[in-house]
Length: 276
Image 1: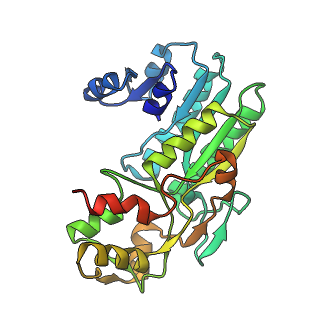
Image 2 (image 1 turned 60 degrees about the vertical axis):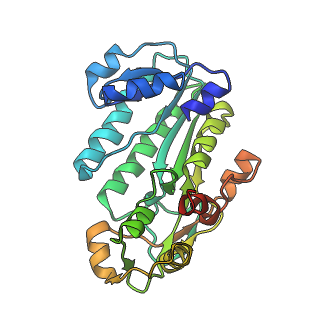
């Protein structure tokens, strides 16, 4: 996202926890801000004068307590800081896990967000507080991007598990997967930041949900490996709170006004399967 904005001529500041990331950011023309956004000290020391914000934090695990600290309380701190800024556009990265549907239903932005998983409930609360705050401030439009599973170079946990030989099918493999390539997510965030259209929510996923079995079958044929073994659906659900739904990206494509760079997992994973 930052690289795309720099390429368009914008000044970009990027926040990272680890000081070792400073060199990478500088190489991309991004001014590094090293700190922990879950602390008041970080926000108190943050410069002022920004007119656009993208919040795209990564939990790195931590369970419900970690999610609450990072997403909900971190967003509250960001909003308090933003109250004194000339902000004209704010993009927030959320997740399609806010949809708790479990019967393979199609969902869109108007579908209920009533997840059973506590971490996803925290994401819903974060969205609502951000939108409510934005609605009470003139000239402060917010776009919520509900991202599906992100993949791309160095990302995509199911692909990495398959390559490592540790993947499992959930039951018979009929659970639906929803994905978005890293580059399409960055493109969506950049576009929405530069073209705000009031407060809105957009599902950010590709054109084609795919079942676990079909996804692993495609990988198996592409890489010449067997299908992974099955793990009872009840065990997987107990460990991960698995949902099962198909997410529509129709509103996203209207907002972008252009097709995705990687409309299905095949276009995105093809180069990763054939790195040579």
